[in-house]
Length: 187
Image 1 (cartoon, rainbow, N blue to C red):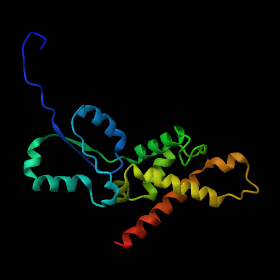
Image 2 (image 1 turned 60 degrees about the vertical axis):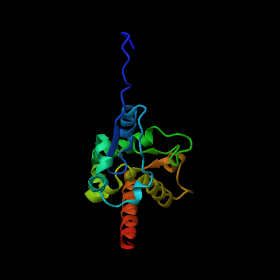
Image 3 (image 1 turned 90 degrees about the horizontal axis):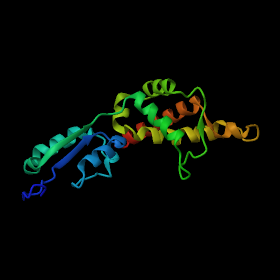
Image 4 (image 1 turned 45 degrees about the vertical axis):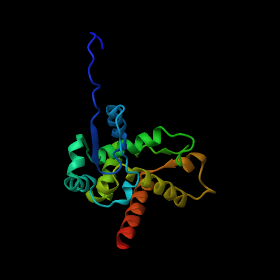
């Protein structure tokens, strides 16, 4: 009512966020863009083994009336191997006390290039798409288990006990691949 004009309030748009699981870091920005609008979040997205955007496109075709109300669509791209390596480094370098990896660190050989190459070599495109950013958490949990199995606690010093090596990360990917294959064989 700046000039004494009375106008209707602008209605906020309905929005749909499309993309594979694990693209969450980009979601915060999109939520801020939504301002005071409504945002639906499917917390069970990891249980769906098909590509999210394909499923949503099919759903929108069946829900034409709902689709007419949604005026903004945000497509989230899958993370590349390089981006997954950056996420892994970020998680290891910004740990909080309740993190399962609190106090652990990566060895010097576990640089971004080495981890990106490892991601590319030890996972398939389908696995990276299916797990996306969630791949990092599962792989790090497996890498810590690999570290525990690899070390002889009697001969290891404190630094060795807390240092995750490239070998541990590789073991983490292999464990992850085994668990993915086991879960697929039960379906």
